[in-house]
Length: 338
Ligand code: KG4
Ligand code: ZN
Image (cartoon, rainbow, N blue to C red; front, side, top):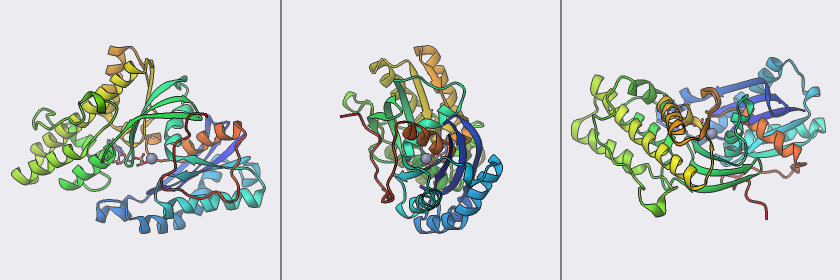
């Protein structure tokens, strides 16, 4: 089954062709970093407009790169939510139009379900059930993944998402948008113990929840007191911030794995591209005896191959969306069966 995946929930316009939910024939992503960079964050109206401009060329590029035409596509999978409604609607309407005109089935996919399925495009994919840490610009959640259609949220951030904290700290110290990659790179040259920063949500009743706003404020206070650092001091601040954020993410993930008695853990979402998070989580797995699964960095960040992969399992279950499929800013995860 050849599935066309489409994604436009935030600031990436993406299209991909995936065979049987596993083999990527093409995976094209157009980022809008330059459009949003001057504002230090995503401007929803500009994102929607850029998606409108990019979606058809990206779709054509995905078909061409896969060496197929729309005649060969068996189904369309599109991100339905959560995300920016004006942005989501662009890929959703294009997907709907293709499915209607070609008389092929359509499914809507939850964006996090997409992230969770990115690792199923790899040879080494986690069995069910497993624990997932989803860390992106919009989400930070610990999930128990019972199968492709049953995901239980154990905990989530009470305020900022992990990626949002990376982006806000990067903006604060003048590293531009999005700042996760820049912090990751600079932190390699810094001392992670140079600036002591707080670790939040250490109490038992908040064991699976996260909070990153206190950490962000601590960095802000440091900058207010000492000024925006440069050179070595900037690298030290980046390394200290990153080490603190990663320590919290790893500690909570290993505790959740223990409590849930899960021996397979995946990390996904944009922040899973972070080099320290990848290496620290791997070390935790070796110490605690869980197997770690992480998509390659380019499929941690938003892409449409993961949407096509998630869509494949929905098609397999016999799901079909109606022509009334609509974008939803706060779509719930595919939950436990009644
Ligand atoms: O999954 P994603 O592409 O979009 C959302 O669904 O939000 O995640 C984007 C986030 C941004 O906040 C970006 O700064 C962060 O992922 N990110 C990173 C790295 N690469 C991307 N954060 C830390 N280290 C990285 N290497
Ligand atoms: Zn995402």
